[in-house]
Length: 228
Image (tube, rainbow, N blue to C red; front, side, top):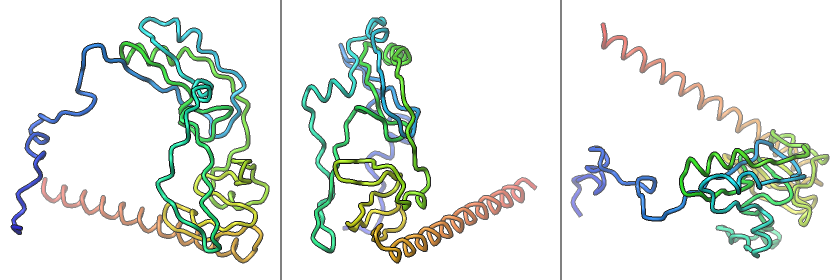
């Protein structure tokens, strides 16, 4: 193998504006989809009316969580298969492709509009009327440790939190995007250790932000010197 870098095969067409992407293709008779997404962090879906969207020009179908449940759409298989230290298996709650019953994060897909064009699908999505009943939401990782958190997946007794899932007596290693910590809610020691890791993670993020700010200042200084 040569040590000389010859570039990637796609470099030339990309840097010369000749790249082709999925959105660039236009096939005869193709349809377009547009998702209506949740604007709530945690809420019960009390009503969903898609009749106006269905009657919009160019609309072929409007799919909701109820449609997927009736069709028997199964939960995608998890990418990771591992066991905890005590041999417990990974709990995999069902995650609907389209929200069913309630939404669990901002941006969760609630309905899918299929139409003859992208603009027709987008316009129709705006005509879907969804009624929500807001539920408590946890937006801070430290708050997710509190025993008073609402149960997010009741079939497993898992607590609601944006970056982690806990049970009252089962250890989990999914804690945050940057650091993993084994947490047992029944153990005060584990909770304290988790809080220490959170503080450490926050310090690391602060250092990263400071580095970015310093780099930006250095770049600005170089640009100023170049102009002068």
